[in-house]
Length: 107
Ligand SMILES: [Zn+2]
Image (cartoon, rainbow, N blue to C red):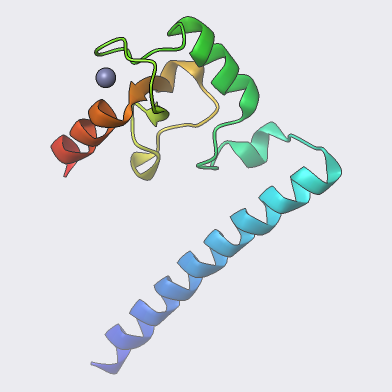
């Protein structure tokens, strides 16, 4: 069906455009030293202020096992499901092992 084909293509274009805009905005902000909260609301990148707060709260270690090696900042509610990167409450520290384990569970 041609209609469906066009619709799918339209959605793909929109998605690509949105991703591209996010990349451009992010680069723009870096260049201008800006940190607009509105733009960041839908950004996967966790701002350094949030990272610092999470690091402090979780005491610089994996919340599962206390490991201090290979730590990752993890979205509690995944970004793809609407989870925010700017809320300290939605970010937690995981070591590589537990970060992977969590991804497995979600899939
Ligand atoms: Zn761990």
